[in-house]
Image (cartoon, rainbow, N blue to C red; front, side, top):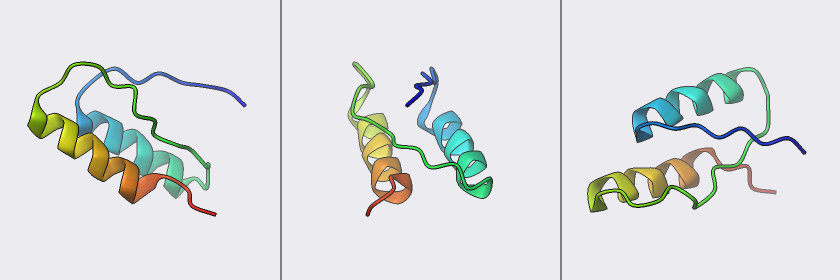
Length: 55
């Protein structure tokens, strides 16, 4: 396994997730995003639900 750390907004993380998914690269967003606003925290949680591989 390799790890990549993406620093930025939930929107930037979503762009990376879309790219990985489009190119059939399995990836997981983990709950390690530090101190963000409640709004950004909710966006990160939504990205985890949308893009994390299940199965």
